[in-house]
Image 1 (cartoon, rainbow, N blue to C red):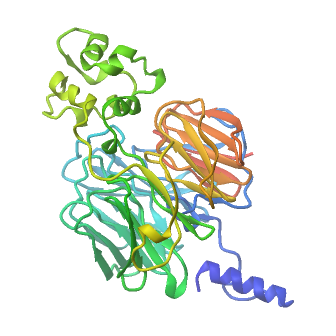
Image 2 (cartoon, rainbow, N blue to C red; image 1 turned 135 degrees about the vertical axis):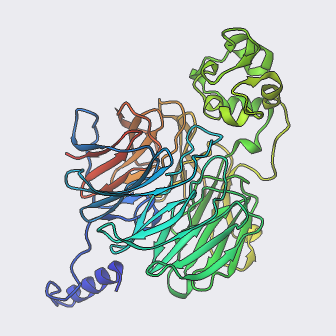
Length: 497
C-alpha cells in the first residue's frame, strides 16, 4: 500500500470513529520531498511555515559543503539525497537532515568531462528520486544507479549519453513502482519505464524525432486514466502509464525546451522560451540585461560591440571581455571553431535573422483528454510574453506563475489566462533556473545571482524579502518540516525559524 492510500484509509476509518494508531502501516508517512519539484512534481509545500528572512547569518539551522552540481534536494524522513561531481568522478550523496552531516557518499567514474556550450552545464543536473526504499540517481554520462538508504546498490544500468551539448537536465520520476526516464537525444530518443525494484524494462516509447530536451516526465491522472506527460521538440505527448502507447499530443511548442509540465485544476500548463525562436534585435535584447552595460550602438551593430568590449583591441573577444550576460554564459556556443576566442565572423550572425529553428515560444493551457492531435480542440489559452527559459511554471491557488530571464514575474488566472500582472520586475537581474516553490502564503524564487526572493502569493506582486546568500543558485529548493533547503554553488543550506 502506498503512502497516499494509507492516508486515505486512515482518514476514512477516523471518520467512522475507528482508531488507526494500532493499524500496521497506517501511521502518517515521514516528511518527504521525494523528487524534482516535490510531491507530485508540483513544487507546492503544504502546511509549512518557513522564515521569510534568512541568510548566511540569519535563521540558518545548518549548512554543508558540497561538490559541484545542480541537482535539487530529494528528501525522505531524516535523509537527503543529492548528486555532485569532482571532475570525472560522479558522486551520490546522502546527508542526515537533522544536522546536515554526510552519512555516505558513493562514486562512479566517467572517462572525461564534457565541454558544455553553456556555463551552467553539469553532469550532475538530475535530481534523485525516492519512494522510501529505493533511491534513484541518474547521470546522463553514466546511466542509472538505484540504491537503498544504506547506500548499497540494488541495481544499476549504463546508457549511451544523449550527448546534449548543453548537458542533460531531466530528472527521474517514480510512481507506483515504475521509474520513468526521459532519454530524448542521441541515437535512442525515448521515454523509458523501468521496474524500480529490478531495473526490468516495462515499456519503451520510442521518440525518433525528439532532440535533446530538459523536460522531466510528469505523472497525470489516476488508475486506468493515468498518463505520463513528456515534452520536447515542439510538442507535448501523453503516454498510457501501463503500456507506454501514445494517447494524445499537442504541437506548436518550443523546439528546445527546459521547463517541465504541471497539472492543476484539471488543466496542464506547459511551454517556454528558447533563443532558437528569436532573431535580430529581439535576440540581442534577450541576451543582454539592462544592467549589462551594453551601449545602444552595440545593441544594434556587432562592430560597435567589439569597439566597446574588445579591451586589448586585438579584433577578438575572450570570455572575460564579455559583460555579465547570457552571451558570456554561452561563450562556448558562440565560439564555433573552439579557438578560445569569439571573432567577428562568429559574433555578427547573432545580430541577423539566421539561425532560427521551427517552433515558437509559447506557454499553453491544455485540457487533458482526447486522442491523437488535440491541438485544435483542447488548448484553452496561450501566452507569448514573459515566458520562462529554464524554470518550470508554478500553478497555485488558481493562478499560474512563471519567471523570465532578467528577473520578471508574471501571474495569470489559470482558467482564462488573463494576466493579473505581467513581466513585473523582481529587482534582481540575470538568469532564473530554479522553479518557483509555493509555501503557504508565499512563493520562493531563486535568482541565479544568489538571491532568494519571497513573494506574496496573490493577484498583485508584493516582494516581502530579498535574501542574499552570496553564492549562485541553480537548483530548485525543497521544503519539509517547516524548513527550507536551498542548494547553492558550494553548499546545501537549511533555513528554519
